[in-house]
Length: 172
Image 1 (cartoon, rainbow, N blue to C red):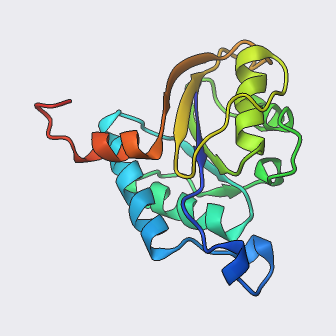
Image 2 (cartoon, rainbow, N blue to C red; image 1 turned 30 degrees about the vertical axis):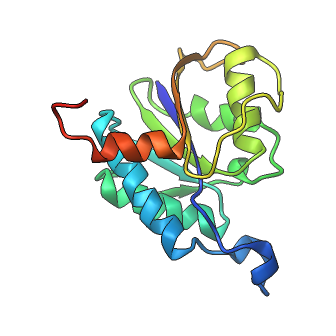
């Protein structure tokens, strides 16, 4: 199974938002950059079978952009296991229920995504693996997925993903 951890795009700043934090949307620039990141994921031949998203607005908006750009057939699943305060090992319980040949994109927040990557790669939660907004990593998991058994295939910043998306096929 391939598991892509993708942090949501740039959202309206907390200081400029008067509503609930969970309702903060992507900025116009954030949405544009997520679309460019999705083009990079396409160039990397990421072919998701499942898209999981945190229930917060900025993550759902990111998920919708990625879902449509990559032509995912299954519906987006909204899961509390990708909330910012969710224990990172809870994501494993969802991954256990997916078919072995799945490619799942998990869209969420820091520090939860970085901690989940740490659990998948090293077996314990650590703040040593932060993702930038709209940054992503691909972790290959053998099934059943267990802590510390993941294999890191790539870890890319949003700028790198956007550059890959813009590159001509002769450059890539």
